[in-house]
Image (cartoon, rainbow, N blue to C red):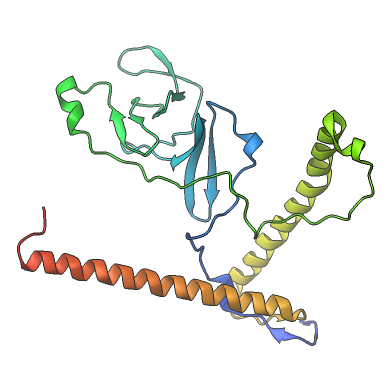
Length: 246
């Protein structure tokens, strides 16, 4: 026997479960104090995997070497299969070094060194990793809401304030965040198991937000399609007049 809750509300837009990410916006990926100088941390935002690191400034590259696709964040000591020497996967100055073949990439994702290449061939390097835009920028779509506690100013400053901030972060906020992530993942699994199932939402603001999300994504896809079509037309034009480089 199956039963379904009877609620007064509006049907949930199923399409909101199918929209992708809009890359024209900033998305939080990591707390700034979780990335130390010289450290490389892998992050995944939607289906994009990046390697974040500090080398004077914050940088992000595609987390895969152009040679074999090895994840660039992998640390530890590795023994060189050719020379029998030890080397470490690390940020060397402003270059990012692959742990396997020691290919080095600068902050723009350009391959600047392949150790076993003859010096006269280094000017021919034209390998790139995709650059991931990063920045210590706040976003209006990411907020923390707590009850306002009438704590005295001296308790919110100095060492005690720093300790209290970490306590609230780890014992309150991150626990709620982990619970929210678990619930969202559960909702998505239910949708994927039965995409045709009907749901209702009793909060009209949520329904309005879902419609906005769908419209924004559809607008982004339409703009992207126009750009791709325009590039394709330009490519065909160059081919027709014989100017398309090979």
